Image (cartoon, rainbow, N blue to C red; front, side):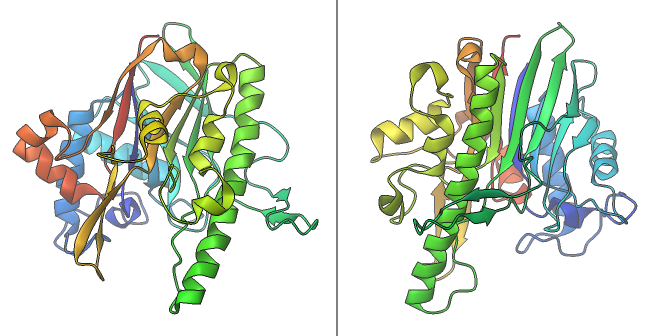
Length: 331
């Protein structure tokens, strides 16, 4: 069974309010990419991925007048994907939902939030050590799924889109530093909250997969030194028996220098160059580690198969600023 996560930049812009595909010559949300170009590229990527389940980050918007689940299912039907059934959890106001697209012949999945507080509410934590706990909220609440395979295996999945640490809106150096540190505090608080939920599942001996875009990773920015650990390290945990596993995260944690895996590629305008970084992860619980293999980042240049397949290579570059990450599960 192949499970994947994929952040699709401005997926919502490719659908009208009725969930129909906007396969036309107008601009998409991606720079210098038309909607028909992005849709064609996504069709190639999703078809090549051929996953049994894909956690989609930045899924189509869903609210009173728009149905993100319908949009995804229309996309799957149009493209002819096996993964043709969609489920979504708490909707948000950012036009970037978290949804799970899956093959109903292989598994079933339902939104099943647990714990107190639930991810659509507030979590209180002292972020600045002033003995006055702040209320932290997710702008994109994690998607908690109860999954059942057709072979009778039950497991949990949590789809994540953690807060960006980028200092958006800052114009002066002091503003950049202040907003970046403030955003990192909030991102770490979200990861502490998520780690508590992870431990609930591990204590209950429930097989667990945590996957998505963490907007963070070991050694990703200079402000990490102020806090000791990255959000990814917090979610993974420390003790062996309670530690999640992702080989790409482990490689970065252990190495910190040299060539690193990357799952996203951004244009940095002021430096006039591309920046690559590892933001997307598929973490598994200890009981799933021996059953999981072939972690793969579908990077157009770093993955040999993607690079040697021109159509797929170009589609990955056109479809999104992130690349899929997949694993094989022997369950």
